[in-house]
Picture 1 (tube, rainbow, N blue to C red):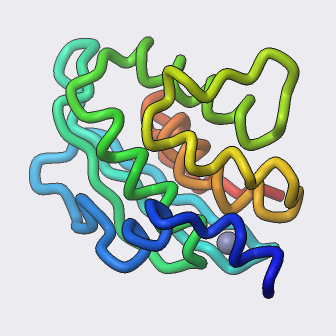
Picture 2 (cartoon, rainbow, N blue to C red; picture 1 turned 180 degrees about the horizontal axis):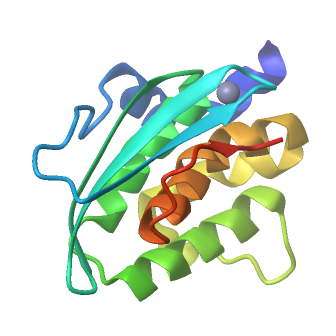
Length: 148
Ligand code: ZN
């Protein structure tokens, strides 16, 4: 557990204890479900998309601290963004947590807390579950997403 504790930085702990936007979204016009069978993380992401702007975003679900905190921080960071901007944040976040070349934490704000995840490949799926689910919801895919 000590390895994991190192990557549970304060921001992650905080968002796991008090997830933001953790509710079903009234008036959502997009949603998708995600499941990470490796860890047992489940998430439903709700979106209100008006034109090309994500005007509101929320989530429900249950999972480990990494998956819950990632979903919580995702909802905070994407509200009010254009769809293309949201996809760009996802791309940057994905590069960060997978340790891809060219990863840059600077534009990601609080999401940079997940940089340490790249050292724990099994945790990458926890950190990206909500984002893959968001991507499916933005694409209008109603089917559920599995990280497998
Ligand atoms: Zn997990």
